[in-house]
Image 1 (cartoon, each protein chain N blue to C red):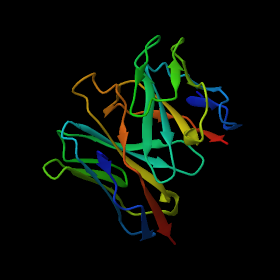
Image 2: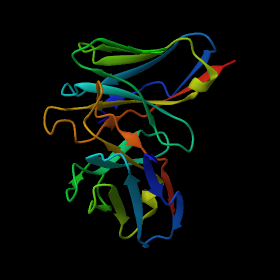
Image 3: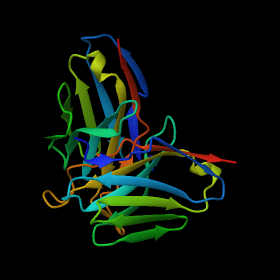
Length: 116
Length: 116
């Protein structure tokens, strides 16, 4: 099992450009999440999905859109990138229960995005 | 307003000694808590968790203690090993509404350095 994979690993954009980050999981998890991590900060939730075809806003959703057309994939889009979106983006997935653990989320390796 | 606080950005401990990482929270609706470990250029990995109905959970060298009245939890690592050097994130979830699917709220992390 590959777990959670993210594409691409690195990207540099110019202000105003658009891009899509792809997250894929092979664990048949229902729930998927996009977080961003900035220096000196914890992870902040951007958007999440509780199942195929559903999405919801997290703590910092502005400037991002998401889609979950297939259960295993969760896409994060930036329509018009801004320097404030320079960050490391992590995707995660989970089922609510795993053994005795609740909402244990499995994370991908991250995408480092720089917006100039 | 930060709902999960890790007030020590870094902590240095000698190999073989006990490492104690602290976390405070303000949201009384949080009822499940998790610790994640993160190495540079990797995604966070789940370490240990605790439900609010418990005050202690142990897994090998790792023990998490929860003091609900003080809204405080701590992670104890004993004995500390060089491979424990990483950033540790405290995270919390409120499972009263949508059953915990709404994602996790993270602290800013504590960088643990194990000295040989």
